[in-house]
Length: 554
Image (tube, rainbow, N blue to C red; front, side, top):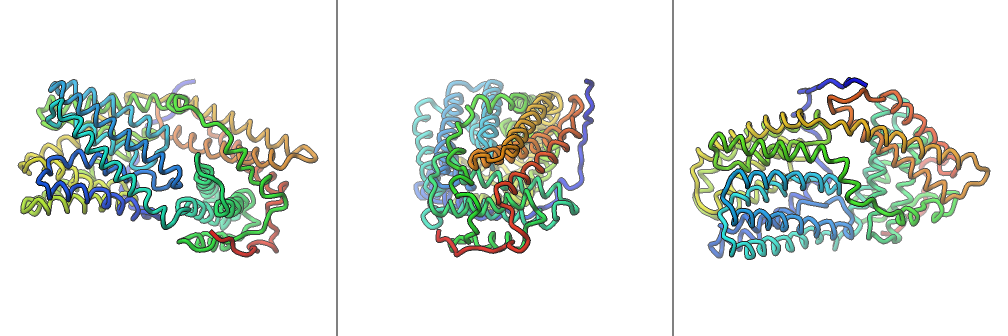
């Protein structure tokens, strides 16, 4: 077939502010707790020149705030190891060569690897950007081979402290992430139920509910998370969100919202009526926990075009600033690496947001730099404040967060020695513009035609999942556990189909997409989901909607 997808680069809504995340303060406070003590200790010792290395470990506290604590412990440990390992490679390269072209090449390859691994593992915000910023900046830090072990050791110590900071809230609210994920699913289901399944915006609300429910199940069934009384109660609530997804007209949205409100804090978890089937058979969670995880190499394979974009764009941006005589090519490299999203349309949006945020951030830096030159303590406290501001604001829109990220990055260069503000500002503006333009051009040049192939595969998977569920429904007495497993598989396949279709729709220069087939598959899949819910006896009658049992203690 001939290419049919035209390039659309919208400007409407790119800078519009959204609602902040429900837990915006958690990463913001965590990064303050992780960054401030090491930096203040270095200030007291008169060694702020080492702060770049401790910052590498401290910034790991930004990750994994949406994961259950058992899963968070492993995820944070891997982030720390990845950060420290990348830093070690950068410092080793910096100590062995001063050739800027070689260093930019190393930085671009590392940025591509970081992007691919972060996307494949779905580590979540801030993704590869922080890792790439630290490793790229370290490539151009003056370094001797004998200094590398000590500097890497500082990063590892700070990373261990960041791990403790990330895990500390679990002492007070051990099921906090699971409760939040379940509450989000209930609220999304309430929004869909309010449409009755046919009202205005129902398709968008249905997709949002399916994604929220799927994310909540991933939280409750995360590897290493052991089932207990609290999680069993959350699973029962999550089943009610699934019921709303399958039978919105038979669901009371206000009751779902009330359950979501009850999940805040550490209070009792509302109980719900036990379904007709036994809980163990209905939920089928032990079966799902036993499903083997896909190998990392299988997750990385579809991301090859995105990794190629990152490598090419980052390298070309760095080379371009070197040709212009800019002394810090890693700024352009990081700018390019931060642009790449799931498709070209999202990459375009991120490019605009990055440029606007960086230019505004440069103005903020120009305003505060006279103050930070008054005393090193002001410099440290300003960096901590900008760390907090970045995490507090970036959930509203990426550009707003970068208004704080940019002055923070510029101030970090002041840890070693006081520098000329005019030169820093000029280089940062130039690097931002070059990185954004070259990075986006590379995204256009490296087409991602695999999105069409992946959409065909997810369509086939959704069809198979629907057929499996329909076959069980046709049996006179299907095994409850088998029917529940088939229902969960179909729900996951529909979520994957919607995400893949959205990603493919924003790409360009590919064959025509089977949009009508996607819509028909989604409609038939959700009808089958509704049928399984009714067959399992989960859908409440209108008279029984909202009736609950006594509360379950956490």
